[in-house]
Amino acid sequence: MTSGVPADPPSPTGPAGTPAPTGPMGSADAAGVPAPPDPAGLTVAVLGGTGPQGRGLARRLAMSGQRILIGSRVSERAEAAAAPLRGAGLDVSGMDNARAADTADLVIVAVPYEGHRDLLVALAGALAGKVVVDCVNPIGFDKQGAFPLPVAAGSAAQEAASVLPTSRVVAAFHHVSAVLLEDPGLDRVDIDILVLGDDREATDLVQALAGRIAGMRGIYAGRLRNAAQVEALTANLISINRRHKAHAGLRVTGV
Ligand SMILES: NC(=O)c1ccc[n+]([C@@H]2O[C@H](COP(=O)([O-])OP(=O)(O)OC[C@H]3O[C@@H](n4cnc5c(N)ncnc54)[C@H](OP(=O)(O)O)[C@@H]3O)[C@@H](O)[C@H]2O)c1
Image (cartoon, rainbow, N blue to C red; front, top):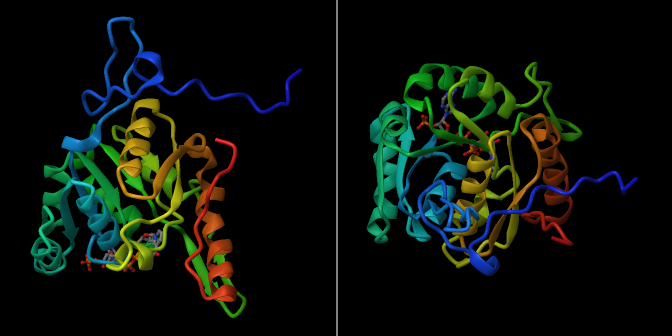
């Protein structure tokens, strides 16, 4: 018997273990060794990109060189969120959620849990075949603070997968603070991003996407069935933040 903690299959690397990025989903070298994916050329949409989390992710990804489409239910709001980023020299446009989902190669969902399911149902056609990154935390608040809300599907990410059966749903970016993402005084955001999903190519791609943001590292953290506790952990982080008046994040040691 081993420790009971099975090793994940090795990450794809280039020859001699050096990264050899090629296409968005990677490819194999002459020896058949898969190269890590390279998301640099992908257009990324952020649905609900007018809120702090979507704006922050849009800003950091654009700073890393990514082309970004901010989505909103109202295109004027999206354009208003995009304008200052574009004014700062970043490649960011604003449009309604449907057009953003349709135009992008990869789509991040950054809307409140209450609106999550209905939005994805409405956009299922546009999202078919695409990598959809869900950062939604179903969290409630009462006098005792933050607590995880029950989700019939198990987690928001599993709910996304159930209404988007032909998309490649990945869960990521749950624990990174919008305040830090949006802080113009920070040139890096030091945090590990837990990346979960059932599609290895898609989770590798999202790990690589997170890794393009200065200070961030994407770490594979399991299948979508393990997303509930990642989403719920946000309630613990909010409690830490309230006690310490901080914007706490996570670092995974030993990897
Ligand atoms: N804030 C954080 O630090 C943080 C950190 C990690 C993860 N998250 C997660 O990221 C998501 C977004 O967080 P946020 O703080 O940016 O949220 P938010 O400001 O409440 O909402 C983001 C945007 O979603 C759109 N929206 C609101 N209600 C909607 C509905 N019913 N249907 C469709 N769209 C709706 C709005 O855009 P339009 O009105 O322009 O359409 C809004 O600007 C949440 O699920 C949250 O759990 C947040």
